[in-house]
Length: 298
Image (tube, rainbow, N blue to C red):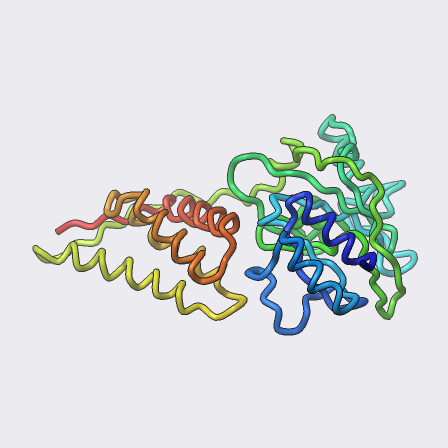
């Protein structure tokens, strides 16, 4: 058994869903729909990783993980932009230290930690109950700060044991602290929540007498068909959009909430999505749809 197989099996033993990345790289195999095809099955992992030195991807959403990526500058001497151009701030770990100091919180380093190939850190956490977190990027200004990215629902990270060899250098992702991932600190969870949507006006659809049942049946059939026919790589997002649309009707008391949930979960799993990922996506979409209820009057 090679080292990458052992690392992939060790990740799966923790309940983390793995999939293959290109040997020596950080991206999924060409044509591999990683959002749908990931596994914790030891037999599948042993069989697949014995064939080639694939690097290891960990799908963070199905694995119930939030990973905080503390990066280092890609160019020597690169200085942080405002508001992070402070004395002593040179990388993502320094930015996190500033955030902790301002929040009056300790550095959250008592968790599972992986060092990246360029000296950065991946801090692994488990998310709390509540809205699923998405992915953020410090470079795009929608995350925690400069050189800090996060990966959660809909994202993945390069797993420990992977050896990445790119133009700007080679390195191995190594476990620095092998403890159980800690719960994501509540203050970080609050900072990572997407901004709330402005209040939405309820929508009422008025139909001729006797048409309500047909309208609702058509709405259900249309969304379920959209999930069933979604191409690989788009099934999770399509399921989310269907859950938003039907969540509006459920919130408007047009369709029972439990019926919508059951049908969407069945459709997602029939399309090839994992049960855990399907449940998270459906719940997230229903919550989003509920913010703009759609009632039907006949």
